[in-house]
Length: 271
Ligand code: PBG
Ligand code: ZN
Image (tube, rainbow, N blue to C red; front, side, top):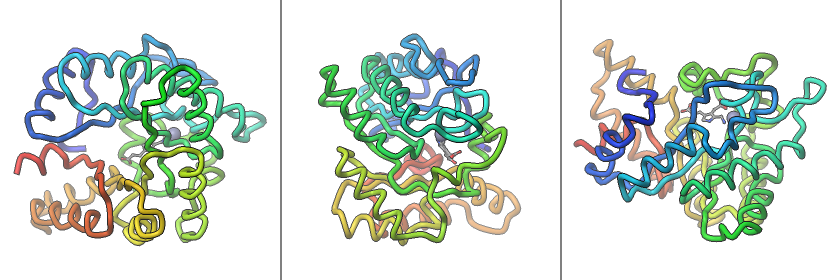
């Protein structure tokens, strides 16, 4: 997408300094491993790309470092969980997610953010962190994450579109609000410190309902497709990019988001 890049470790110092200088409080790190396999083993390699990135950012800034916890960028099939007989094996996946979270915590992550949508993952990660003396590492769960076509540009950039099937057995059905609220409630019970709604723009009602019902620190993820649409329309000369960006981000805040994760962060903060 215009203005978005995959950074090598060597450029992290410069870009994270820029983020900090603009008073953006934190960053969310995703990794692009050199090799993928059936079980996503590169994800919990203590010398992996994200683990290195965490250290690089921590060494050079005081930024809050959040890391994405999922398997889809590390598995050859690009699903968010382990596959057994063409189906997701939820409970086996939990063990791996715990290992990834611990590996990120050891590297210095302040908050781990599971985006896989397996059932029971927040509890499993909390237990693994606590058992290893990382009680102070927080969990921001992608609690209400919908099956969405707005993730297209991200999947292209991360080479993480599933090679077969789709994510509907683990991500939320778009028309369903009550199940989303149940998912959020479960994550809170399992120990989530921050709950997230994703995508943001087409799900502002979900943000509103979640914030109102639970009163938890609530995050909104302004995803790749939302960013791409505004960029494309403004390039065509159809909308005023700056104004639309501000109005869009404001709508998330108005709906109740305490935290907004956005590809617009640098641009918005520059204003
Ligand atoms: C997968 C993941 C996705 C995004 C981040 N992590 C979506 C998906 O493919 O299910 C999307 C982010 C974006 O579109 O900006 N765990
Ligand atoms: Zn995933």
